[in-house]
Image (cartoon, rainbow, N blue to C red; front, side):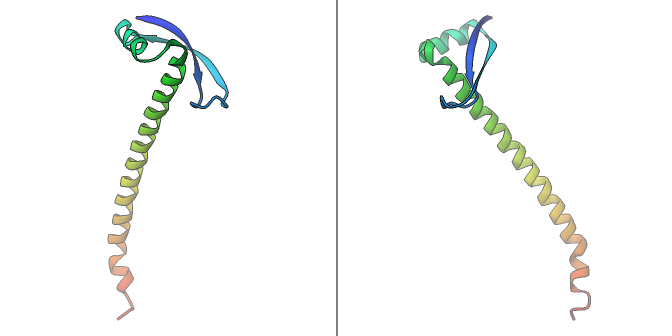
Length: 89
């Protein structure tokens, strides 16, 4: 594993505050990254990759929450089915 220091953007735009972190990567991954991305653009690349993965995780969590809420709504609707028609005949 090789370690390198990144100036990680909190967002891919230059207008955002940055924080320095230490990241360890397998040598092969660093070599591949170096082939694909110029050394002065690695921070932006890594920040964008992290942003996308975090967004994907948030979306998956939201889907799970919607599914759970839908189950609760179906359960409540079933419980209320008989009550709604009471007295309307």
